[in-house]
Length: 199
Image (cartoon, rainbow, N blue to C red; front, side):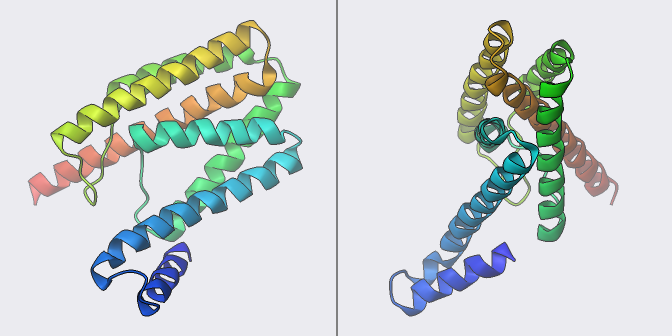
C-alpha cells in the first residue's frame, strides 16, 4: 500500500515536470520512508490514546525511531509482512509500557534494557543486502548508534532513579525492541550467508 502511494506521488511529480525520471527511485524511497513513519506515528498516537499513555507512546516511538535508524535491524521479506510485524511490535511495546504503570516491574525492565543495550552496542550497525553499507558508513552509523544508545540508556537510568514514569518505560522498551530486531536481523543475515555458501 505504502509503495503504491509512494510511486503514485513520484509519478505525479515526474508528469508535472518537477523531478527528472532518473531520480524516480530516490523519490519513491523518500516518499516510502516518510509515509511509513507517518503511518506508524499515527498508529502509535491512536494506541497511546486507547491505552491511556499517549506521551509515553510518542516518547517510545521517537527513541526507537532514532536508534533503529542507525543501529538497523530485522527487515521482513515483504511489505505486508513488514507492516504486520511492525504494528504487532508497536502494540506489544505500548502494552508493556501501560502495564509498567500498573504493576511494579521497573527493576526487571531496567535489567532487560541493560542487557539490550549491551546487545545493541555489540551488534550495531546492521545493513541489508539491498542497501549494504560501505566501511566509512559502518563507522559513522556505529558511532552515531552508540551515542544515541548512551543517551537513551542514561535517560532510562536517571528516570528510574527520579521515578519519571513518563520517560522510564518508553526508554527501556525502545532498547528492548531494538535489540530483539537487531539480533533477529543478525540471525537472518548469517542464515542467508550459510545458504549462499552451501548452494
